[in-house]
Image 1: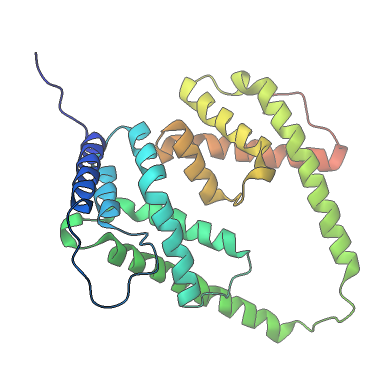
Image 2: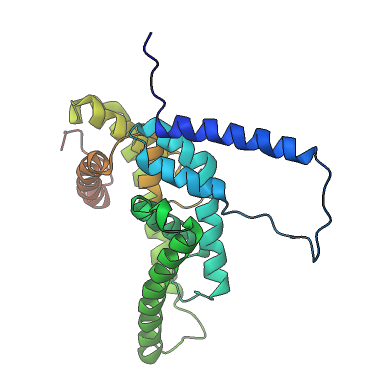
Length: 266
């Protein structure tokens, strides 16, 4: 009987079990006294993280890649983004902190395939990647904010009219999105005929349905969530997203003008 070769991710989990067994065996041995202070912080980038990223890049099955990313990589990326933002004080952003962190994590995920285990530790490589991304984004936003500060006179009484208009717009957008979700739920199989496209569309509609419960609901985070749930490549997702985006914009204009969503398929 021919023994099936393990995939890179399967090999990683075998290696991980062996490492745990070795650590448990080492824990039974008499401990040598160490000089100096005990480490107070739990390391979030470890040799296990390096091996996980290496296995992730070698793996071809998306379901296994997603499980590995979720279990052993995402937390390390999330903590790295958090620490670099605060350590280097990248605070010149016009969006909430959690959105900035999510964008950094998404960018690290985009660059994950470029990591080479033989060239050094993952922590060093991804620290540089995250820092460079934040430097460019931070400087661009600082220049934008400074330019606004030079030309805008702050109104102590606030522009209540503009705030009300914005509030009304946000409410309209929420109402429309709820109707858009219903429309797509009822008509999805008429808009898309390809099974793979329907899977992506159905996943995106479900994410829109629970959008209030998603902490960082932005484009990059959505792509990550869709990839994790479907196991499909970015190009397959982008095709469906672009079609739905076009429908969303056209239907929103109609909704704004008439207060209804058309019954026709766009």
